[in-house]
Every structure is written in C-alpha cells, then in structure tokens.
Image (tube, rainbow, N blue to C red):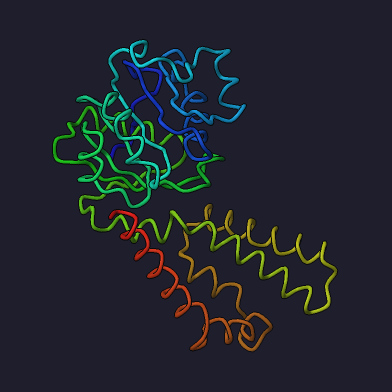
Length: 275
C-alpha cells in the first residue's frame, strides 16, 4: 500500500467505533497509543467492557445520543456478523458518505453497502492485533478514494501489518488462514503439551515446554529472512528424533491433509456467514 502510512495524529473528523469487543478494543488501544486524539473517538457498544468505559476519562465518548455525534468521517464496524443486520439502522444513520471500515468475518462489500451505506473497506485482522503483531488483509470498494484508503490503512496498521488485495473473492480464504489461524497455533501448543504428558512429562512442565516452543519458534520465524520450510529443514537432522516425528506429521494422515480440510471448512463457513 504505502511505506509511509498516515500518522494517526493527523486524522481529522469524528471516528466512530461500532463494537468494542476484543478486536474492536484492541484496535482502539492501538489508535490511541499511536496518537489519535481521543476526543475524536465515539464508541457505540451497549455492552462495552470496563476498560473501554474508563477511556471516557481521556475524552472518548461512549454511547452518546445520535444527535450529539455530529458528522462522521470514519465508521469502523467491529460488531459480530450475526448482529450486523440488527444494528443496521443505527449504522446507516452514522455512515452517510463516510469511510466505513468493516472487520466482520464474511460480510461482503455488497452486504455492508446494503445495510449501512458509506464508502467501504472490508478488512480481516487477527487476534495478535491485541499486542500489535496482527496481520490484516483489506480490499476497498471502487468508490473509496486515495485519501480514504490512506485513512483505512493507517487505522489498520495500528495493530500490525496490512496487505491490500483487489479481488474480494479471496477474503474467505484469508479469513480461514490468518483470521482463524491463531486458533490453529494455540491448538498445536495445547496438543503438544497433551502429548508430552502422555510421554511421561509432568503437566506443568509439558505445558511450559509446548507454550515456549511455539511462541519462541514463531518469534524466530518473524525475525528470520528464511522461509518456514527452510527453518524446518534446519532443525531436522537425517535419521534423528525430529525426522522421526516429521515422518508422522508429514505422512498421508498428517498436517497437510488435515490443514487443507480445516481451512476449506473455515472458508466454507465464511461464505455462509455472508448470506
């Protein structure tokens, strides 16, 4: 997109965040940490957690009356997809011709336009956004101009890296790989610990070994210029213990067919959520 994202301190106009759950809250935390003026932010969430309510002390407005919000420059929609149409009348009253950035799984640009209008950027972040290490994939509607796309990019980069695509049809697979992907990694740590216990390790030690191995390996991959296949080969001595394990994990019933099936199932579900 751009190597020099727009500084959030330079954003103008009112920004409304609809939905301040885990992902919406993580994004808001990132925006404020990177200089967005809290007095420009309105949060719409009748069930906002205490951490969001506490931001009122620095100027963030929570659930004001519609006539007190004024003209909205940017609306970020972070409600659950299943609640989207129910929230439609409220969202449409806010959107107008504003930039609308949606992070809802499965909700297409066409559906968002139908329900709330606005100039739409559809985005799919993931939960490492909570620590500023997320990755988001975004696609813009044809009527989103360069300035609005820059604003969306700046908001999304507050929680990690951003990749822009032109084909919205890829978003269901994006959701399956990176949106749902952290759960696959957490499951790996969970099952490594369980297998360690089965091999005779105490529960506490097996859990710590699995957790630190997964997180440390992720950080090594993050810092390395090598691809994941090369990193794997570098750990694997011919005829050694790792090779013995990989013979199972890379066998006909191993990771490849299981992950292919799992990601296909998540892709299918993402498409179903769009209906």
